Image (tube, rainbow, N blue to C red; front, side, top):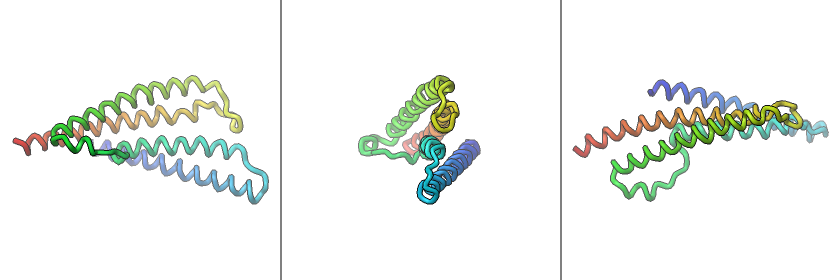
Length: 163
């Protein structure tokens, strides 16, 4: 399972790095055309907005997989370690359900629905820009399963310590 997590982490880091590098180049091009050439590039502005969405959604999936998203553990810390573990499993299960239903299924449906609609400047199907949602949902679902496995492994250690 560690190897699978490492592969997914590498893929996510690669996707995020590539998307961020491309976004940076687009913004530099926008600034250059707007302020140096005095002729703003409309296509790059639209594409940068879509790339920002891709960077954000893929970055969120990566942070989710690392379990480094923001949380407020005040309530959870009041429970015993075994109950904290159970709450973590519940949270990961709810995240898995959300990722599969809203992001993967819903994202697929909105992607399919918008394939006939063209973007204004790029003349590309809008579905391509929404495709980041189901892809990110797949990564979050994979990470959720891996996180549940890790939490269950921690649970075994907690049970052994209490015995």
